[in-house]
Image 1 (cartoon, rainbow, N blue to C red):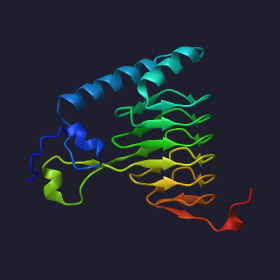
Image 2: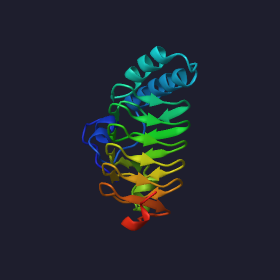
Image 3: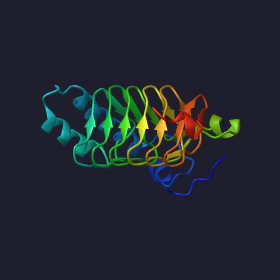
Length: 193
């Protein structure tokens, strides 16, 4: 059983420690995010100014010329940071109980999931309703194919490619191409178009 140390569940979550996804702060943050991403998802294609304003309210930071095609879903929004020129296609899910950082010019395909939410391996801790978050970092000029899933704690280096449908369970070096479930690196001779 975890001891109570006086901090809120949100404070524990933001510190990257075990926490319960409950309490008034977390509930309010979830409602806020749902209200904003629902409004974003209801915008028309020609409403670029309205989309930009909603994203500025929803996300932690948004660079110039970011395109995030709706529908889009997240937990809180404020832990998501998108650099200039990021493109994310339809149906992406970014579970941001910890930081999600996407580098300049990254291209993200349809239905990609960036997942920071994790759960203890110890079943007794899971029975207590505890979870945690581990940050996800996507480098500059990365291309993530449709349907890929990036798991908690993964960093994808600059200029890397993640094949469609891949499940990325560990870090990807700069310039590497990975694919499969779990994603594995391709030999350099296989990277040429």
